[in-house]
Length: 148
Image 1 (cartoon, rainbow, N blue to C red):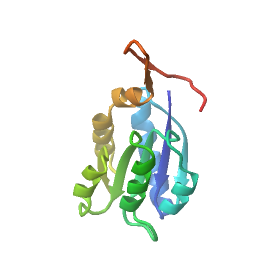
Image 2 (image 1 turned 60 degrees about the horizontal axis):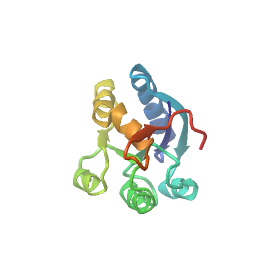
Image 3 (image 1 turned 180 degrees about the vertical axis):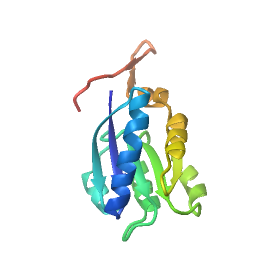
Image 4 (image 1 turned 135 degrees about the vertical axis):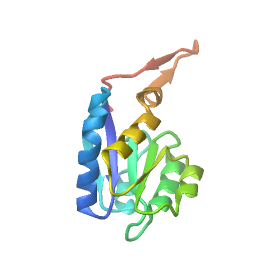
């Protein structure tokens, strides 16, 4: 299954580091990372965003313009299911991340053990659950290789 991922950070070097840091651990547990869409601001992400477009969105908290927290609030108004991960250098907004139902709070600099802990917390079962539909008889069917 290809994960649909977005990374939003105003620093190109941070987007590149995170992109590189997540590919190998995801692959090790059988999760293929498709194209990773990168955005330089919350505003840019929101212009392209629609419910169901992404499985996982990484949001830097401190960006010029709209913060990652404000971006997450707007995303949640449109999509209750997308997994959000905040990435930052500070724990200052950790409590707000829970209010926005973020699934993880990843501190910079990115380290392999932190990325693995994030993946363990998210879990491939959660990603499969997001990609499933409930049939009228109450069964869930996981959608794979679906073109969106």
